Image (tube, rainbow over all chains, first blue to last red; front, side, top):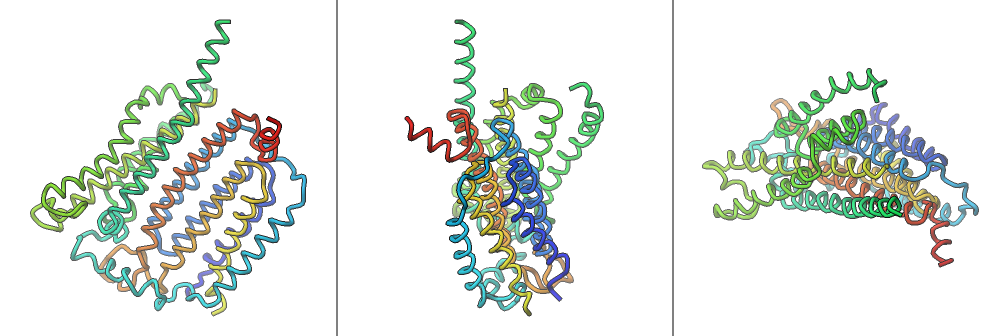
Length: 186
Length: 138
Length: 116
């Protein structure tokens, strides 16, 4: 049976975590739950045979992302305000979109179906790549060799994000320090 | 800072292991789960732990901002440089077959270099982002 | 089997929870957390498509015939790292907004902009 009980439990826990995040108002609690959410997602990835991805998600989502958000919290405020108006319109939009999406899944291939269209094309070629690349981990050979161009682009995106953060925060730090120096002089 | 003896001792024990594990993930990525992205993030996690426990001035002494900024660019440069090298050797951009006498060896070398580039950039970016955030909190 | 579509439905619940947080919450940090939920749901969707029944992780070894599809894994692997980089950019912007407006509540920011 493919629907392992752990798999079903993880999916259900994920839904519970996400709904708790919707209800919570304390931002620190929301961030902690988002760390737990990432850890659950990582566990789910292991169940789905994506060990490389699970690895990354556990380190990035549950580790670095959470630390960054907490660091931002230290720079800003913690409580999120009680909303002044009832969120009826967002609720309606979300229900409608969700309903349409669920309707759309009804004719999708079932989870784990080996006959699903995704498995009929380039994936087969990748799984027979050992004679061409000589690397047992197919994810690495696709990432670095077959889709090397794509990965170069992703690395450039990470680079650009760092440049953006440096421009936003470091210029601000410098300006603040200058302001402080002026204040001390007067 | 001085009261957190347990925290300091434990993290002193843990940080070398985390960094070593990151290197293992980086260079074992061909054979098991792992690769540049994961290794970079784990490496950065080690330094983030160091920052959290020992404070920003110590990290700035180990990894000066200037060095980190150079490393961010160096990783991308290494990656793109491998592409340019394959072109100079007569192949297509990022076609590692031409890097060595045998296509498979070329692929191995190319993947190793490219993953190293990814690892350097990702690790440096994550550390820089965290250090910048920590530095804003004055 | 009735449970064959369960993962898609949970993905949709997660996606809608994230979507709801993004449009209904006025706190900017909570909005970013909502975006992260949304992002995570898309990751699960991709990875669940790659699973093959009785398959194993796509690391070639003798004795195994059936592997899960590696392509979604590669796409999502890079997407996760890019995701945290863009999250960092977003929280940096939030920190700057807090410095300029003294608040991270969207309503207050709009109010201050109108009173200018």
